[in-house]
Image (cartoon, rainbow, N blue to C red; front, side, top):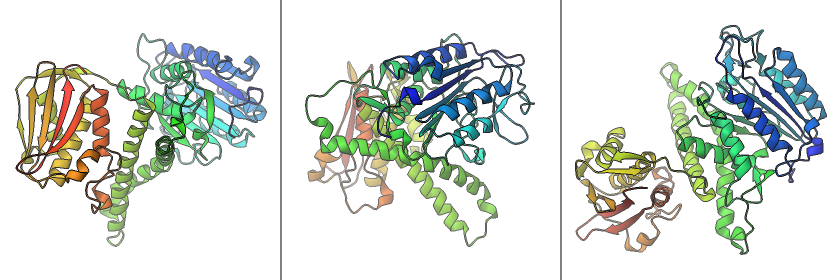
Length: 471
């Protein structure tokens, strides 16, 4: 399973429910299905024969959906895709996910909607080597988490699940937009591709591109789960691919970047399950046997640490792939710095100095990431007192973070923004991954600025963030 899907041996089922008798209509769903059909049947993507792409629009009966899925599952030997867009419903009695149809009722789903189990079973029996489920509906992530109780495809080899929302979250169909938020990003990515990526896109690259765009637009983040590395094999041609004339793609740095991207994505699948289980354990910690409670707390702490590391690696991957995006807005710099300190309960240990009103246009989430890394490092590895100063200039502004520690070893200063670099190799594993300052610098560059590190004449280090008034 190394090449692109064979259209003759592949089958796609696209189901769209846009009109409802007892719930709000979703007019964008019709455009979703039409656009995906055009993409999968176009020569630029797959060249899938129209007879191999089944469209089920506004079905009135659950069995119309299940029959289409069964037929496709029996015929597909290479790739099998099921896509649904509409309302996702939860059975009040069992917590299971149902896919709504025209006559579905939110409180009586069992006989008026399609149980997700009806999709899972034919997929499990299919001979297709690649099995992909794409759900653009509310609560779609339920098939990935602990609440799925085995209803997901995660335990079936050669499967990939892509969901529009978390298990208890709503998907988004913005009023007046042509597509729903999730499918709109999917269609855009299939059309535009990913600049800087390889000749063929993998499912993981598609997912990361969508996730980055949706996150930047402050819309619900998609969820995914992969089984047996299906997400790392070629899936569709990359429209944005540009042949390289040098050997950079084969350089050690390129190989390492690809490894980090693949590894971080592979870790997300088991972490999804681990996180769900640790959340349940945490609720029970007060009632656990005192002998095992310390071990349970250790598992909870380490799972959170691993989650933070994987999220950091995913952010690095987005920078490498060129999919990191800005969501700029006009903010007050001093208010942003104060909010960063308050959120982490650092205000008592930091002196803040600067103008009362300095309004600039930047991405506040990325500024917070930078500040959290610079101030957190000053508090952890420097020494009190820590001072944060904001200095306005005609077209830019500076934020200086000073500590009173021993400073950074002179031989380490040129490398402090390198990935995985730690100035003190004796620091224990728990004190960080060596990625914080690298990500802070990447975010500064994305907004048109940079960060400089130096030692003060008296004592301590000083990190200076420079940003333009308009990111």
